[in-house]
Amino acid sequence: MRTQLEEFKKYGYEIYVSNKHAWAYIITPSSNILYIEENHFYGYDVSFEYIPSNGCGSGCSCKGKGQDRIDPTVITIDLESIQKAERNGSSFAWELGAKRYDSVAQWFDGMWFKEDFYKL
Image (cartoon, rainbow, N blue to C red; front, side, top):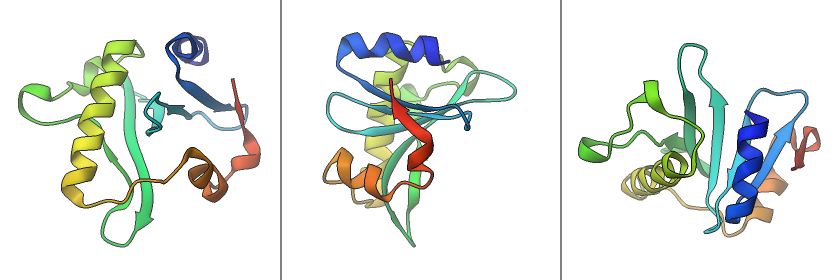
């Protein structure tokens, strides 16, 4: 997964990975934060991260609905899939009334295990 994520840097994405944890974070060019982890059965799970709250948790699914739905069995690490996941997650977060982070620094400062992650 790390090698595939490295490719996103040329498109303006920032990638945070860990040697201790199996998941990673993708910071999009529009400063949205995506959590990504390999699904044990198929593809990848991607969630859109936002400020934690009692009503909304800390992130939501990026699978989408209707014609924008991403079949979880085919979520891959390519630019088109990640861009679609970002749009779907952003839309769902908006529906939930979730509050986005003001900056990547705000997210990183509050992140658990931040000492375990580094920028590729």
